[in-house]
Image (cartoon, rainbow, N blue to C red; front, side, top):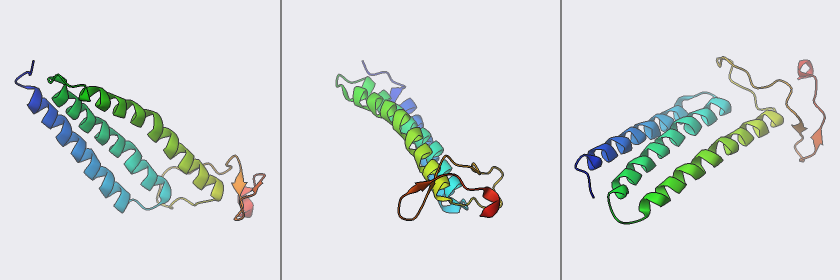
Length: 131
């Protein structure tokens, strides 16, 4: 049950995913601060991994093996974990007071939920004008 055009479609998905991975790597190297460097691989690499997994899933779909199910589970787990982990990294950086580059358009929240001291103790928000 192997369709004749399925390998071509699979290769195109994998090639598009590779393009997004390269874009994520370039963004990671070229962007100026932590927040934008977190954004580039989160968005582009997630999409790239999903496209490569879909290409792999399509190539295994025509066979009698259950490898396509593993690819589907990979896509589901990536979609569930990557946004949560990147959000937690950005919130932790904002709580630590990591500054955003001046050239960036948007600013991180000026009043994060809590600040974390160097010793790991939390303290109430500070007035941003004092920093």
